[in-house]
Amino acid sequence: MKKLYFLIFLSLILFGLAVVIVSRVHHSTEKSIAQKEEQWNKEKLELQDELTEISAKIEELKTQKTELDNPELDPQTLITRLQKMKDWSEFFGNKSPSGELPIRQALDQVREAFFVFQGLQDQGKKSLNAVEEYLKAGHNITLYRYVDPVDPNNPVLFQLKRAKQMENVPETSRLGMIYVLGKIGTPEALKLLCQVMQGSSDLKEIMNAGSMLIAADKGAFSKAVLDVCKAHFPNLRREEQDDLLTYIRNISEESYKEMITALALYDENGKISLDNLRKKIEALGEDFIPEVYAAFNRPETAIEEKAAILEPSLKFVGSNEQVRSMFSGLINGMNEEEKDVVGSMFVMMFLDDKEQNKEQRQQYLDFLGQWAPREGDQSLFAGAVGLTRKTLAQMIERGDQFSIEEFQKEALTSGFMPNLVKKQMDFFQKHPEWKASSILF
Image: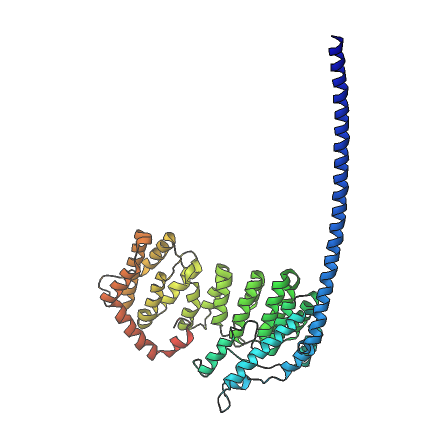
């Protein structure tokens, strides 16, 4: 029995020793692994630093190699190539010189311009001094244009339009430089681009430079872009003003409304600007109706001018008392001939509102009730009111199931539409003042 106890005791001692040995081995192994992991991480960081240093040296060597092996990519050399190009502007004016445009030479030059602009862009900040000097020198050439004002179908111009597919090649060399600065995109390049925009009087340059600045940092540059646009706006032609207003609206709806609000409704002679009136109604909506109402009711406003003033506001006739008053005043102020032609056209415009809902259609229907045809009235105006009210009632009843083809079919088969077209032709021939003064016709 004593031997059994002794063996058990001896086993316990041996087990304890084994646990101690295993624990020490395990601890030693963990310590060794941690030391090796620390060493590996250290070596990894050293390798990463070496790789970064090697990459930087490679980039430096690549730059040096480009400068040595490709001297034609030097920014000043590229600028010189651009300065030697031919200006094609004389071939795109209303009075083109005799002889045909040498299309092959023109296309080759477009490709050359692409090479120059891309080269300057690839050189990055190294190009900035050369680009700045070029822009300050005032040099600019027309490389090509998209539209021939004399003959839009000119096959030569068709070939040049295809050149537009060559990405990044603008119409003029200055626009090319603007593009280069925007693509380089460093703070220095953007600062120079902003200066170019602020010093330019060319709308294309201003809008292209502004677009690139806004794309790069709208918060930093939107005020500068808008200030330049506002400063140039009064000196632009009407078409250019329209383009610039659209451009401004894409940047800031608030600035757009400020510009529209500031537009003069009358010229220096007191004549209303129908174009500005339209812009104001479109931008300011029903808030502008009181000014429209005042213009409509000026004593010197002729009946045909009243029609032009009222037309842009017709979408508010269902809800706005002043618009309804103007509409009634217009119709009631016409003679029978004017009412048959112009009045009929105004009445039928209630059917052109594609966004009207059921409630609005009912408002139109009720409003037209004051001119509901009396029995025996065969006038064209009575026919227009009757047909329009009938159509509005069908629209209300059928909703989305209403087919405009039914209206068109009835207007034709009843003889109303052919009769109206004939009277329109006779009326505007006899009364050109209506056609000249109204934006409707």
